[in-house]
Length: 562
Image 1 (cartoon, rainbow, N blue to C red):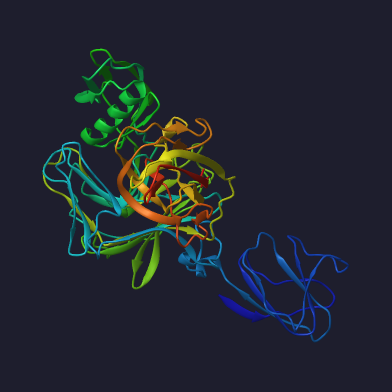
Image 2: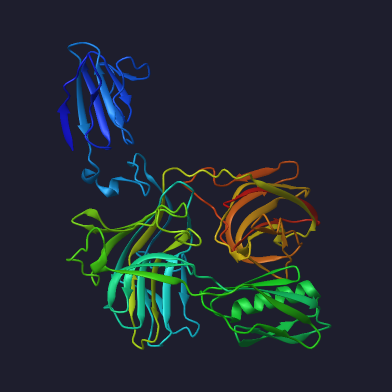
């Protein structure tokens, strides 16, 4: 940074910058004209900015051409402060290089000091030899001694990139010693893509994994079970027994999805009409899928083949900004990753040292590639350790993690809405009016977008009190049938079935009397967010306090973050 008084002239424009760097200009006596041009402007130039001694300093955060000044009197004075790019702390910039002038918006934050695992996503290998736990205020992932052992803890909520805004993750991590045939990483992680620090084998560095795919399969029931029978459903080459009640095609699909969800490790299942969607959690090629039963019939169709992510590993010794020779990964360190995306943006990696984040490496992606740097710029933040032939336990730990969007968040997509009258709801029985589920797959891909409820209205015809309850991930007493709002254009599924709700987490409530409707407003600010995550359900249910059965009505407005 350099500050100087410029020698101005009344006869010609004088260049006031030495390079294309940010400037701060202030006039102290009389007026000065400022022009931005690659070439020296003519004295007769009519397009200019005017800076007087009564004006505030002019902050110019970015230059792509030169800056020129012209004195309007012999006593005109101009002070220029120039900020060379190398003098500006990289952490003072967004992922796109602008100077940070507002706070980052937190999207997801987790901490281990309350010893809770119910607010994070935990995954272990199919044989369940890996374990996730909390040890001394640290999230802890242990592979166990299986050659395929895996353990990971990540944020439950995902952070989704917003076009033109940077995405950032901050996290702590303690790594085990590097071990051959094992990978331990911390940072932005999904099955398909990751931007992380960690060990690949015995070498520490930065791992950019991309273009993995979770297997997606769809089972369509074509013939219902004639009565109670047991179907054998083969998923990834392993057979599972599913009891069918004989309630019809929709009931068969519901029972298959509900049963497999409990039995099959590292898979998500959901039923919609006569269709069951299966989504693998781990991005690997999968085995055979079949459906066999005495009278019920169905066929599987592969929607997306499982594929392990490609890995680009940059060893610490090859980092292009600072190789951090004093770094000891076995001690707790603070890390940061900044991500531009836009398909072809750069990716920045930082480590905290002496109280400041130090830029250690940039994956310089712009103007060098024809394929986007990740297949889906949506991430969880957390930790993972996986054996790939190693038969010793390898542990990774971290105390906290957060994911952020740089700048304010705006949801500019059009809202959706629906309403329903649920007839003859009995007293003292909690009954579904409408349920909204976020699909696990969309557009033949794993869905990672969220649904934001905005407004829920309730009314009742009962002469008694109606207790409206908003329930997250409800438990239903019997099968329930979901339908697409718009299969090709929406991630929302809705059910208006009159079924009893027996459990779930209550996140909102209204007490309503006849003739006195009420409403609940959700997500009126970004500070407090209620989101329906992929695979999750939000239910509007009603319980009438007493008396005869009565009709109750509900309407809802929501937005999808597509």
